[in-house]
Image (cartoon, rainbow, N blue to C red; front, top):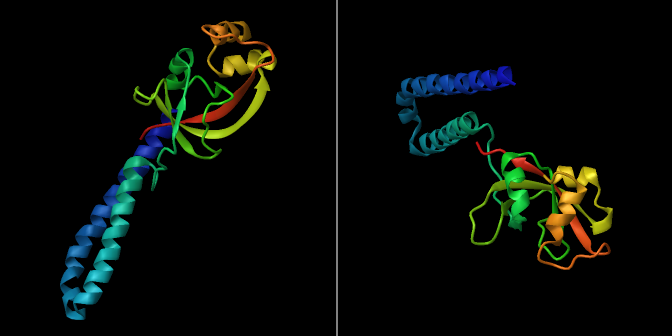
Amino acid sequence: MEREVVRRAVVRYGLLFLVSVLLVSGFWFHGSFYELGLVPLLLVGGLATFFVLLIVRASSSGRLWRRRPHGDVIVRREQAAAIASGEASLMILPIDAPVPPPGSVANARVSEAHPPIAEIQVRDFRRRLLADVGEGDARAAGYAGAEAFRRGWSEGRRAGPDEIVLLLEFRREVPT
């Protein structure tokens, strides 16, 4: 993993060095652009500046653009720590919870009033009976097991085995 981090840093700083060499050479050629006129100077200079800014942005953040969050997913408090740390890859939500479409980016929050704990990319979601949530699903959601999930889920509500829940698969977006 450390080798990958070093490789990315070398590539990013190498790109920044090449951009700085390009900018210095651009100053040298700049004098001849005045002979062509104002419009070519504005078009070529604007295009060159745009590409330089794109390269600098890609080298500093690792990507050209970033998708903005599409909405919010309200999570249970007991899942928040596992989602924030990146341990969870699944959320178990009530059936009536608003869920963004698969492929979109959303903020995971404990409530509307709290700041986002993580940005997630929704991969898929499916419905399942509460009784059918197994050990694997509960562990992927950050619980110690299926029994711990059922105890936490039934706190403060009447939950029967025929209750339907949403299993939301996601990938945590790493901030850059």
